[in-house]
Amino acid sequence: MKTLIIVAHPHLQSSRINRFWTETMKQQKDTTVHELYDTYPDHNIDVAHEQQLLDSHDRIIFQYPLYWYSTPPLLKQWFDEVLAYGWAFGPGGEHLKGKEIGIAISTAGTAASYQPGGYNLFTIRDIAKPMEALANYVSAHYLPPFALHNAHHLTDEQIASSGAAYVKHLASVQHVQSSEPIVILN
Image (cartoon, rainbow, N blue to C red):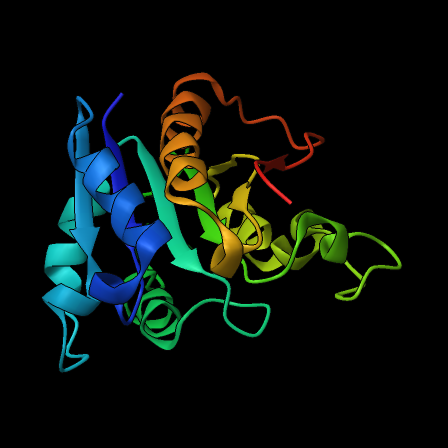
């Protein structure tokens, strides 16, 4: 299975987690890592190129830090432009049909803060519902989210461990709608 990791971190070089994950994923067999902010610093997205990348992979993972309970702005723009009517959905829009779509995200909050009644009120699965809806809308299979919490307080060893857990997650994850997200650390 060919996997495309679309990394959307506006400051990847200063990120300990997403930078480590990106480097880890670059070493994986049958995996293409595509860094959006590096590729499109001017935000002028080459839609045809992006669609070709999607066509040539079976699994698409969107990797990003959680921004105000959503994605970073360039990834939202990417969705708006690349997942076009007649290509990703609507008449003739079957390019993503049957593919797998998932997310790998980092959060500043603890795992406990992403629980009903916690500081953020909702689980990561709840917060990621728009991504699940996106996958459903383009007739793709949604994978349970991979999440790493407490980003600003992790040791280098914990980050290294999260990279191994990310690789293991991608090797074993199944697209079962009722699965809970995998939570690595508090």
